[in-house]
Length: 441
Image (cartoon, rainbow, N blue to C red; front, top):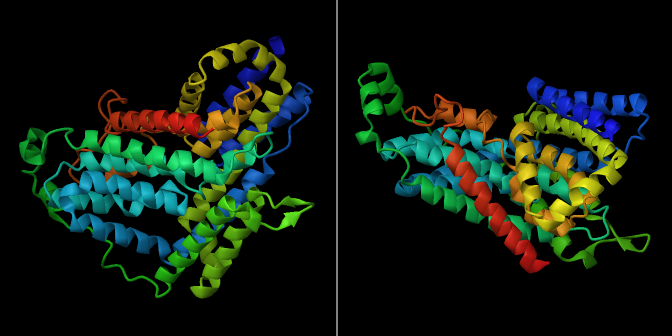
């Protein structure tokens, strides 16, 4: 028992230091944790999460190729056209656009190009920008658990594939996609009436007396004047064809080739298909390979790979070494109220700030406690909580890109623009996902 608490303190300290350092530090310090557990406590290291890392690597490479080909900008322009066509509905259309954009490309980082457009449409329509901006940032991250090519989804797929009752990609999307949409809509509907209208906000009206501030508010921001490569639209068609191919193979496993008498695992299918369709984009759009490695999507993806490599390996090593202790002491509580595991995932996510990393840390715990993959699927939306402290890049970008200053972090740190939309979105989507999982399985 003493060894357990020492090891637990070690793992927790490594995670906290990694979070504080940021970037790839989470992975490096996680690797250091594995070394201490192995050589210091004589614990056998578990298998590193190779499959998870390879899936993320394949998806990120294809997504980065799409970005360089101009496909991501093309999607952003289509979303802008929709919002400018119906500006009065910006508080509903903006978060739905950012949610679906993430679902399509597998990363919430795609939201950055849309945020200044959302703020501009709101200002031109005299709608308080905080209303669509805050929920749009939240919705962009909620879309991760509903995307067939997101790191969190592929992590869940790979980790449950090792169990006796694996969850398929189709089952994940059947639960998380409708749950995410319901959560986003619920939070957007609440956001429609938050705060004062700009023409009634004394703080905004006072700031408007400053000529420099007035000029910044009256300026126009758009992506529609950006010239895209000729193959941008084609790259989107190819990328979506790859996603649809993965979904089709997941729904109709009889189409898969047999390997040793069994269908090719979906974890391998995702890797093969995404790399192949990334190559199709490379040739069709004549993308320069060097530009792919320098893209924002690729950089963010590689950081995620390194982070998950170290932190997942350390967490799994700790769980495997202390599985008996964990089961004996926690299993009764979780069996009595399985939903309490969602609270644990939410708490971890608030600090880890990555849904894929949260799942790699928590899934081994859940499985060791005897929770079924199907039950864990119902709790999956709760792995997003990094809106809680509002330090995530998309939240900070929303604050900086709202020229009106209504999207902000309050005096007391936690009274910020993202708190209530985040709670409404996550709680609603988790309840819906839990209900759907119970109904399906």
